[in-house]
Length: 314
Image (cartoon, rainbow, N blue to C red; front, top):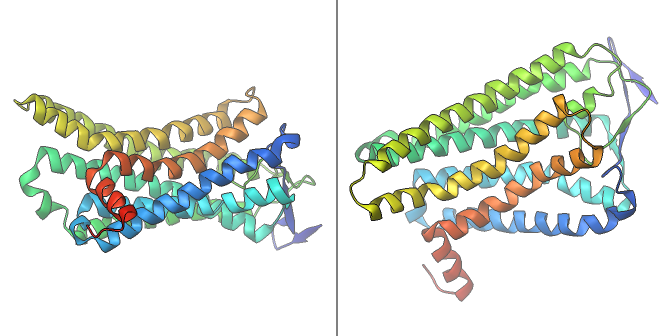
């Protein structure tokens, strides 16, 4: 059934197939996905609690980490509960407005996460390359403004996706061959020229992800140069150690994201099941791994987690 508007018509609802090609195994695949989502919620909630309650952690690095945890919670929660409902309860249908909402949240908060990772790279650059000015440059006010700019950028860049798609006519097929709705998957159901939409999608990908990756790369080149100039081997190891967790988080976010992006635009011969699994990994694995990586690699957080489990105050 289609609802007609002034210049477009769209279905009342869409059908998401889940993991196409693994229909017989979907019930069991949902269990590890559920476990990963549980770890995501518990891990990021624990990080937020530790950072909020410990005044010693109200520093730029940990404030950015809190932003990352909030972003991960929103990003994973925008897809995983509905995906589990598909895999366990065959709740394949999603309303038109709910589909647009999911598209908006997925792409907005993926952009926000990229922006937070860039801000964290800048924080590491200032802390290592110009440490005497770190507290005067990255004040709490500046940190808050960087977070607000990242959020505003995501909203302003992604909102046109939803507006343009809402004005287009859809084909008879209302089936999305994966477990959640994102921009490129929805565009494939449009019965109109989508050149402008695809072009805008590429512009957003390169202006957000491309820009952030360039800034992150420049920051770490400068950090590497500064660290290699340190006279003490112990000092060099300590400096590398402070950056190791952030580098791991960057890789777990950008590698699946880049792979998913390339498959969408150029991987026409990649099996559909591979594409769908990587799309799920992109939105589930980084939010799950981020608190684990920081919990293990960051001594202050690790110590507070251990003290919390032992029932002692830090």
